[in-house]
Amino acid sequence: MSSLIRAWGRIETWLREHQCTSALSALHPPASEEAVRSLRDAIPYPLHPHLVQWLGIHGGAPMYDAPVWPGGYVPYDVEGLKGGPEHMEDMLEEFHEQRDEDPEHWILDPWADPLWLPVAGTNTGESLLIDHRPGDTYGNVIEVDYEDNEVTAVRWKSLGEMIRLMAESLESGSPMPYSRQYSLVPRLDEGPPRYLNWKLEKIQGC
Image (cartoon, rainbow, N blue to C red; front, side):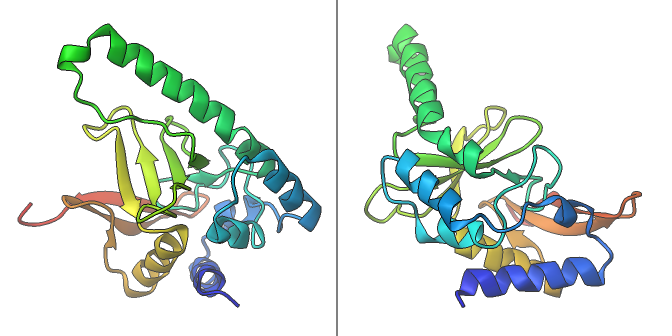
């Protein structure tokens, strides 16, 4: 059993112990081998193993019914993942068009790459992507947020690290690392229904 699978098991245990299962119950069951195979065929590069491991636990969720990842992110299902490469092409084209309009004053880093795969989204338009480029960035979890000063930012080294840190934060009640200036603090909202909310808090001294 992989460390990612073990960490997610700890998360599900915590959610059930705290009667916080509304989002959890909306998650799809594990993706079938056939579904994962069809996804591999649709993506023009090998899938990161952590994504494959995640799909073996839950094959995504209906948007926007299961914000179980930090920041209110809902993991995409297999069909949603298949559209990732085309979406990245459109986003990259948009980036080049906007940069070309004012190249002398353009300072933003690209918000798309052919080897970035969107894996989760929020109901306000933010996205999480897994970097599939070879090298030191391979597997990084990137957040794309048009409202932030950093349109793109690496949040975690991998999906496995994100889920491990999430489990540790829930069990200890301590903040979850997010950026140099902010952390994510788990909070239970009584609802109804009861649900987990990750509050963005500024790190003292930053």
